[in-house]
Image (cartoon, rainbow, N blue to C red; front, top):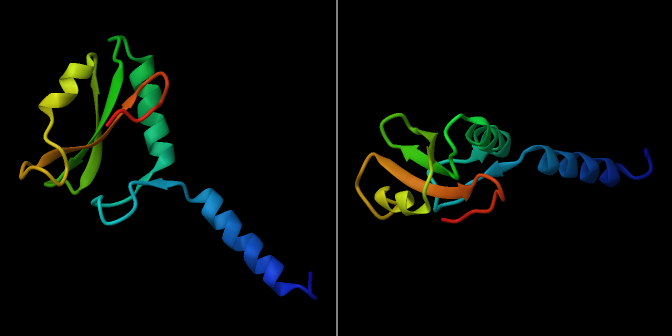
Length: 105
């Protein structure tokens, strides 16, 4: 490896990229969210007593952080104002189907 220091640098960069799994990065989002936290929320929603179907990721302007909300019906997603489209302090950033884990909003 001493003859190829760029390989070590490349390997370290690749490991950093693979180990830092953030979601909601970029100018359209208030701050990144660690993917492992999203995975915890999905599992929490699936393992609850109430048969939730969707995870709503909410950005709380007052708390300056994300929070999970679980809903049973897809129609309930419409009651949340969306981030970047409303002046409310609790705004929908994304919504996921708890079982397929696909993003629906």
